[in-house]
Structures are given as C-alpha cells and as structure tokens.
Length: 245
Image (cartoon, rainbow, N blue to C red; front, side):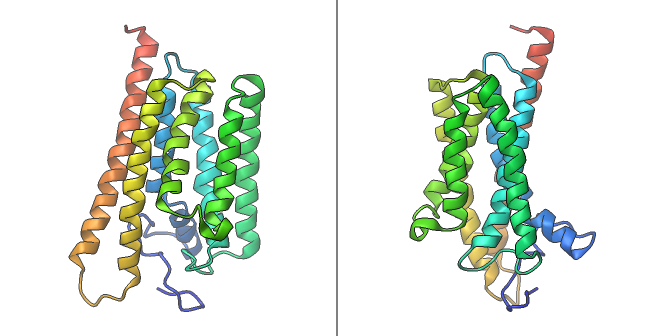
C-alpha cells in the first residue's frame, strides 16, 4: 500500500493489527510494539537487578519509556525523517507534534517526580535520552547519531541502566554488564530490522524466503527478550512476596 506521495508504508507489517479503522491500525503499527516491548523489557530487567524492588518505580519506568520512546520517539521519527516516512501521511503534522509533546510531557513529569524525591541520578539518563530522541529521529548533526550504534545505546543500554537507577540511585558492575548485553541485543535487532525494511521496500511478485527469515528472526528476538523480562519479574515478585532467600 502507498501514501499520497506513492511511497511505501508499513500498514501490512506483521506487528500491525488486521482489524479496526485504518488510522487505528496505523497508530498501533507506529508504536512498533514488539520493538518498544524490547526497550521496555530492558528497563524492567534493570529494575529487577536491584537488591530490593520498589514496584511503583518499576511501573513508572515502564510508563516513562512507553510514552517517551514508544509514542513520542516513533511520532518524531515519522515527523522528522528526511527519507522515507514509515507511516506516510496517515497522521497530520499537528497530530504527530501532539504525540511527541504529550508523551514527553507525561514521561518527564513522572521522571522529574522520582528525580526530586528518590533518584537524582536518573536526571543524567533523562537528559541523554531526551537528546537522543531528537538527535536520532530528526537526524540532527547531519545524521551522525542516526545509526545502529547510537540506537543500541539509547534503546538498549540506557533503558536498562534507567531501570536500575530508578531503584537504587546508583550504577553497579552488574548493571553495567547487563547494559552491555542489552546493547548487543538491541544492536542485533536494529541490524536485522534495517535489512528487513530494505527488502520489504522492494517489489516482490513471489514470497521472498530471505525476507521471511529476517521477519522470523525479529519475532523470535523480541519474544525472547520480552519473555525473559516477564519471567524475571515473576521470579522477583515471588521472592519478594514470600521472603525467599
């Protein structure tokens, strides 16, 4: 399917629902839920590494990243892309700006509350993530930060550290090692994703096996990451509730 400028859009992607009005489907698709889920999973994993867990903070960092990156960053990407806009003209400039400002406003207000009351170290991550949101998605500095390395930093390493910091107001060796693993997972994901998008943009009259393999890899990677975060959360909850160990 194409937009008004005859550029391909991603309405038929595997992560886009097949039901509902077209604009609803496009909005859910724009959230890139499997990949947003991976990023949020890193924040949860980071929180679960804490010796003791404040569950309200784990939920808050979940909300902060869902709104800040899941909504605002993806809206900014569609608004600011200098190349192919992922979702064509489904959303007006005003709608996209409202998504960017609305998501960031709520996420930063929530973040500021915890920065002031519990975890001032979170301020550093908040500033860096805010910078990356604009530098990456609007391709500032001639697109210097719009690449796989900085994506893996901002969507892998920093979210995991944010999850740990909001719990402890510190950074440990364990959290640094975990953030490196998160970086590697995010880096693999974005490399596969870019190859997948390139192949999807090309017209195909027959089913392309390589494209299907890339899509399957993305599904598996996102499922494993999200499942691990859920499993770790359940284990930590049981341990906390029943004072195991």
